[in-house]
Image (cartoon, one colour):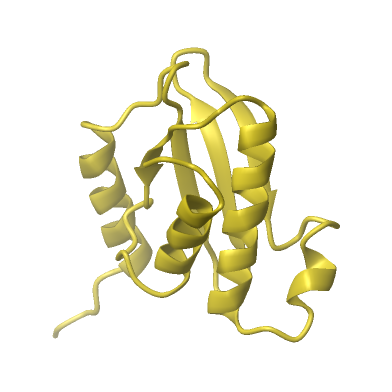
Length: 122
């Protein structure tokens, strides 16, 4: 009998495969993205110290009113803009993009492009 593969386990394998090459340093931290069925979360991480420098998600009080009647892809773009503004305010101009094992499509792509247009360099 054929059983369907666990999609999240496959995503985690893809993520770990890409994480072998990706690492955020103090000069160029890692922008990590996680998406659930309803929300999207993004954070800028310095892997050398293991600290989150900046974060944004659809659950933030600043973001919630902006995404009230928008689709999930548009909400991802709003999160990308907010994250880029917060990162630039802390002096972070360049990041390494970690898509978290997800395809560069839909919400992930919208977040990345919005962050780029707001001034972050990938």
